[in-house]
Length: 550
Image (cartoon, rainbow, N blue to C red; front, side, top):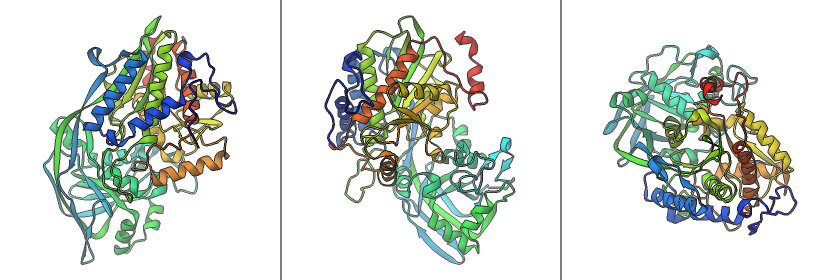
């Protein structure tokens, strides 16, 4: 499909027709496509934090915000908020081996396993550490669940399953059925194993419960890690000496050599009475050097000050980072371009900033934030939430944008996860006003609610959502949309082939950006405050600051 180059945004079919009287001529699909093409080009080197690619990205974003007529919204009147981090990466190759049943096999980093560490140390040296199967590696007292059962993990490697115990269960149990909880996320698995004093933790990768293939694990697992700055004692407590993933095929062999069936033991782990056990005489050895350095990366922040209630704000956000330069893929490409994930979101924030700046000033202040280090654990968003540039108590909402589709228009638009927040109803309403509809997240088992930057704000109580593309394509329906989505996640997610193409149809990008504009405009001029639903996970955190909004 060709890209429609119409600044008026009047699209065929009328589903996403943007009125010509929108400020600045409306949402421009050509501009959206151009931003993605530039940000996802080889010149930007995959936009890794604290790299040459970051500097080019920041320079581009600042220039575009300035040209749009926005004001600097960063620290001390600048365009940026510095985010201090620690970067850790392997210094040379990792060696690893698995001894079991009198035999020793060499493990290849990136193929059999991925091995990493965020511990503040110069090297990792694990020698003949026993492996203990901990099921899903979850301790959730409020759900009457504890996989650890008091097992001593000092000097041992915890082997855990990805997702949580309901994902493949016959019926919903303690963990909300197919809708993954935070306990199912890899970040939680690493955190809990560290709290338990484990020497290391290896997550068993399976494509369906992880929601991405091994190629994605390899791409991220062989990239530098980033962490917030911590005191030495805090860093030691927060991280196991060794962490990583293993292929399912390796887990199957590991269990079989211990006289066990992997699938049968996984079924047992779905029950609350599961008890951890040592995997026979299996022993893991691993050795590699670490390079650790303090770095500074940046959130890029622009603002449009409100006319009558400038102390209140609405945030439009998207993360600018991708995975930089990595190992060559089958075609020889080394730059992980991050076009859909998430140059599309950044392009939308830039275009929203331009259109809002071209119109009358809204009552509330608007912040347009390109966040760093999302791919490293929502670090830029978490830093902003801990050091806000506008009070979170009077931040009405965060509208985060992730992975808009380049494949043309859809009848629907989606939000990630089940947020249980009034903003989801608002998306439904503005979509209907444009002849479209809102679709709940069709893939709750992927845990997207916990994988996007809005989560950092939600944890602080701010009503927040991530808006993403729908699946119901005008050309081909849900079947076509799902096929395109599945192919992307199977082949290009976090890979070099997530790249801009001249065949992109940017009308869908513009149509979805328009709905974010509609909702943002309404929030910007409203005296209402979005709310979490009763009993929602973050309701109490918001209620604690109710007095600031009276």
